[in-house]
Every structure is written in C-alpha cells, then in structure tokens.
Image 1 (cartoon, rainbow, N blue to C red):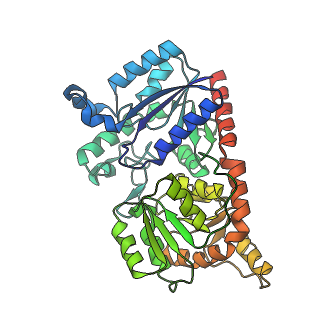
Image 2 (spheres, rainbow, N blue to C red; image 1 turned 120 degrees about the horizontal axis):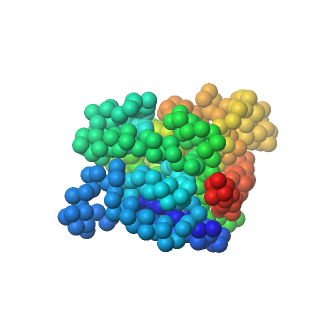
Amino acid sequence: MRIVVAHNRYREAQPSGENTIVDSEIAQLTAAGVEVLPFLRSSDEIPSMSKAAKALLPISPIYAPRAQDDLARLLTEHRPDVLHLHNPYPLLSPWVVRTAHRHGVPVVQTVHNYRQVCSSGIYFRDGMICQDCKGRALGVPAIVHRCYRGSRAQSALMATTLAVHRGTWRSVDRFIALTSAIADHLRDYGIPDERIVVKPNSVPDPGRPAPLGDGFLYMARLTPEKGVDLLLEAWRRHPVGTLGTLRVAGDGELRPLVEAAAAERADVVYLGQLDRAGVRAAVEASAVVIAASMWHDVLPTVIIEALASGRPVLGTALGGIPYLVGADGPREPAGTGPAAVTSAVAGQDPAPLPAGVVTGTAGWVVPPEPAAMAAALPVARAGAAALSAPARLRYEQTFHPDVVTKRLLDLYAGVARR
C-alpha cells in the first residue's frame, strides 16, 4: 500500500503533540510495510521564505498554490492509494483535499481539533468554553474576539477559510475521530456516521510498568485551558503532605503560579520542561497522572503515556478524557468503583464516591471545578493500586501501536477499495 501523509508541522519552538503523533504514525506504518510518501511543510519555513512567497501567505489557508502544484506532481508520479491529511494550516490549506480528489485519490483526515468550526480550534476563549461560532455561516464572533493568533485580520481570514471550505471538509472520504467526543463533533458538523471511524493515537510501548511511585503528576502546557490553576486551587484544600507530592512539568504563561505554589508548599515540585527521559522518570515516580483540562481536550497524549506505564488518570470530564480513561459509558453505582474495592480489601466498609466523581476502567473523571477535583484527589490516591493493572490493560487493548496500526491499515484498505 502507498500512502501520502500530509501535514503542516507546527513550529518546533512550540511543543506539539500533533507533530509527535504524525512522526510516530509514519514510523509505525513504515514498519508495517507501507510505502509512506511524506508531504510535509513546516511553519518554521515561513521566516526564510522569499518576499513573493510571503506575499501569498495571507491567502494560503484558503488556497496555497505552490503546495497544490507540488502535491499534483507527487500524485501523478507515485499514484498513491490514499492521502492521509492531518493539519493543513497555513501552508497546505484544505485545498489539498480537492487536489487529491481531482487525481482520483481518496482522502482520510485525522481530526486533531475543532477547526472545522472554531478558528482557534479549541472551543475556548477568555478562560471558559466558547462555542459561539457553531451553526454560523461565518464565524463573526471569532473575528470580534480576535480568536486566531490575537489578530482581528488573521481571525477574519481563518473564519473566511472555514466558510469557504465547508464543502471541502464534507467531501472527505473518511474522518478519523480520535475519541467518541470528536465523533460527536463531526456528526454535529453534518458528517454521516458511515464516514466517521473512532481510532485513537498510540504511543510506543515503554515495556513492563515499574512499581507505582507516590503522589501525582501533572504534565502539560501551563496555560489556562490546560487547568493547572484549577489543580493548584484544589491541591491547596488539603493540608501539606497529606496527598504525597504533586509534580508539575511543562512551561507556559502560568509558570509563575506553579513556581509560587512550589515555593509555598513542600509537597509541590516544579520540574520544568522535560525531555523524553525526564517524562519517563516523572511518570514512574508518581502513582496517578492528572489531566485537569478546562476545554474539550481532544486526546491528551500524556494520558496514553500514563496508561502505558500502568498509571491511572484523574481528569476532568471534558472532551476525550472520559473516553481515554474508560469513563464515557454508563456510570458505576456509588460504592462499587475501584476506590470502594480498595477500601474493602483494606478491611474497611466500602464508601460511596464523592458527588461528581465518576470511575472508569483506568481512572476517574470529575467536573472542571476545584471542589470536585479536591474531593477526587484522595479517592485517586487510595485507588491507584487497584487501577494500575487495568490502566495498563486498557493501553494494550486500545492504544498499543500494534492495535492502532492494524485499525489504520484496515481503514486505508476500505477507503482504497471504494
């Protein structure tokens, strides 16, 4: 099978889980015997572009002429079976879908965000969830609020792009929804069920999990939508040392809040930005990983990394997080979750879970509120051991590269046959 993987890489100065996932997926497909034809552009190319090329940048999200010419040559020369698109902005543009179809090549797109509708792609503005542009022919609120790169002009361009390419997106042959929440988003956008496949990302298998460490790990961008301020407020509701150590890794505009918390409390440790070895060490030192997102987070890779290492996850009940921890199905009755099981093993009477805490197969989810997160922290600490093996099993059955790659190959084969 011959597959074109098309992706506009985000700037390397801005850590991108999407870049990492695309690189990993290319490696997995190649290892599976697929001939991968990378069609990649990078936003890091923009500063070194010629003046003529820079002059065309404002229209490139709508139509990028050079990318279409290059893609047309690639398709003509190699005659691939499928084009797999990830991020098209700003140097590819959704027009690559039309170019592929003109050459008789079906298109699969992995939906990493909400940018079919939302100019910023995250449904989050001014510290809260925002869906003001849903159902509009033109996303005027995005322009008014400068949602794209803080610029009214660039927001107007992106809102126009989304309006122009509504028909383009609806012509995609198959969408890969990373979670059930993204599948719901696509249905709401008008995509029929038969063109949506739920297939998550994967991370490499780190091997047999190390014994549980102690305490909690938060590892994400230190920005409002990722909820580190929510977590710190919840943490302060417990006396110092009663929950073990809270380790915080990452960088961003809210870093001063984390540094202040680490200076204030001996049970908060700021680890900074970590490399791969540092990530592995931080996960192994902890018992529970926290995903405190305040937006409909699509698929935080840190959760899959936690499950792979046998660490259950405490997250907010937003976006793809309930799906990842196996808490998007029917709720368990109070007093029957792993925390209650742990209490029973310890010779205690099973206690019902605090209001708002929902137990999944590999963790817990709570409303994105400090009180709910504070109530869930001791539950997660007490139940970590009981959910360690189920967390690893969920990774093996759902997120392991062998499982995910097979599903992707089956998807390609089905689209190519059509």
